[in-house]
Length: 319
Image (cartoon, rainbow, N blue to C red):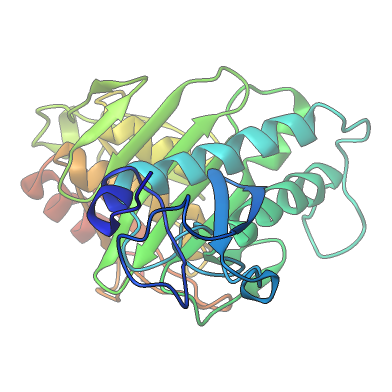
């Protein structure tokens, strides 16, 4: 039997014979071998002396996959977001008290349980996390995942089936992958930068609305006067409201409060909107892609640029 490095590479193996020349017959020398299972595979270390078996595979990228590295694929990244969302659903299944926790204002027991589960999965996957509930974790990592583990927790506490986990992965070029899942119904929205947006695996697109007077608009907060819409809906979970714009259920969405939304509220839905073909801006022309826990914005989204312009003018009229 002979070992060739080219063949080993094709087989996905690493061969370490530190003091032997290449193409040495294994029947010619005594060898020491050490086999150890690791995540995503098995490590086989081979040497001609016991001292050469040093567990050198530990913490090496070749055998320890970190989703947050610069070479992570979109498929791997979305799989990590899925794992975090699944952890949230599992954690919420054990929550008995869905009321306020008495910690920070507006924080429910369900928020805390969902956050603990999601942050554990994401952090172990090698990404940083900016969470509404627990702040910024591992800010030096290549990818930061902006997380609202339970958007619409008041709805959840009341049994209103419009609440979600909202996750958006951001790299040096901006939002890269997003996942928003309605935890009451299981409906799933996802998007990858440059790859379109989907609802339950099928492509989505916004409505053809261009006139505010003929549009159904989702609201967060309430304006001092009607802004000219045909109808409005106040549903209570901004991530899902934005996804409703992306798939044409709503023609637009407008935040009528000021500086009430953190990036976790809108970034997931924003990427899904943009990849579907809708448009999203801050009402006061500020950058929406921010990774600061204290940052607050006023998002506005619409099915078309014309409709967005009309809605922005109406929103700015009472400032």
